[in-house]
Image 1 (tube, chains in turn yellow, cyan):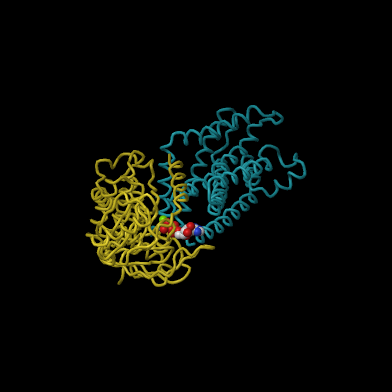
Image 2 (image 1 turned 120 degrees about the vertical axis):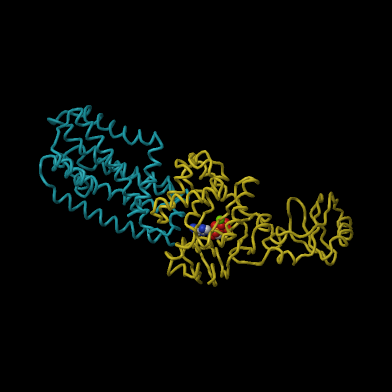
Length: 320
Length: 241
Ligand SMILES: Nc1ncnc2c1ncn2[C@@H]1O[C@H](COP(=O)(O)OP(=O)(O)O)[C@@H](O)[C@H]1O
Ligand SMILES: [Mg+2]
């Protein structure tokens, strides 16, 4: 049995094809679905968690079809959505207890055992009886993971679990995710944080406008590129590039190139800059990262972050 | 059973821990009652006895429409999505909301009844109060189911607030809450005759006089059933969209 299996899975809203013919097969791993805002990550998670019905194609989770056996699917999964939703007027323990009850664990001592276990695993023991109003963003996220754990799911869906958290909190969340996988839980996680995906995901799929354009282990994907040259200059980039040097995209104000042998090609690339009259401030040759692959696959099209921010701000205001 | 009680438990704690909520839900109806009962015309022997059923139903109306804001809150803040991905029956979310809101409304009604007695309303036998609670419960279920259904259709708090304002005041003034049916202008009377508030209010007045309001009860039962059917159908259709 495959934990997550989809075949030609698609979803369209009135005028947008949000997810386009997705084929996935995921088992005993941390699978990262990567893509810019609006690429269809949340829609994919929505279909797999039975919140949205597919427009066409099909999907099975834990061997059960999401449209014909949604209830059985929900029995084997847990889901932590993109936007945090813990009840701030409940304590950490009460928040978990609430979910444990909804998961149907009626026996009080069993419930207590599972709550204590979840609190323990997520390092929330010492603050368990404080109102979650007083929790940091990272703690609230961990609390949501703890809620999801009382259910002992086979598959855990996490939609952008680290968005909006600081570096330390992010690392902590990922360490916890990695531990869960060791305990036999399959994890489907979406993110647009490439360093994190590269470090923690067993396999990733890169989503562009609803289509998976690349899929594989991070190291396999990276092996498509030999080396990377980045150049910071006062202008754009030369029109003519040396053979064997390919433009990938723009990243943090630098232009990124791929080459089979960056160290050898750097001088001739800089020469092209000189010939075009562009002044080079700095240059660097390095090994490829997943971010480079991502950049190459989805391009640098400026993503519409405004929509995202507005929703985020509204949520923050309403919680306060 | 167990699951919907869990949702009721959650809403109760959230409500209880916001002191301002508690104060406003309890103080508002009291203020209404004192204002209407003592300040308004003294054309009737005991205007307080006449107006108390109206205040009870108005309170139930406002309180029950709050079910919609509450589900809207869960929807816009992402709680609803989390609940819908759980293995527990999805309808329990809806039932939990309606039960919590109706119980809260009954609590407010109790406050009103107590205050009305304190300021001079007639004291009835227990059976009369039981009858009143039955009518109020039916009315509360209908309106809170209506509120949640409308909130499921709308997508933000502002439009729900507009609906709330648009519905509650006209319904209230076009009912028998403040003037009896036979003293109304014709236009108003036509509306009042189809207004569920009228049935709830007149039903309670009948009960107070020892009459069993069979028609009102049947009307409210049918209304509650109809709205519940539409509501659960709508709920099902949005939850798998
Ligand atoms: N309920 C909806 N109605 C219409 N369009 C939607 C809806 N939800 C998402 N979309 C659109 O579908 C696309 C994918 O969105 P989404 O899955 O949220 O992407 P991501 O999670 O990767 O940011 C976007 O173009 C978005 O505008
Ligand atoms: Mg998303």
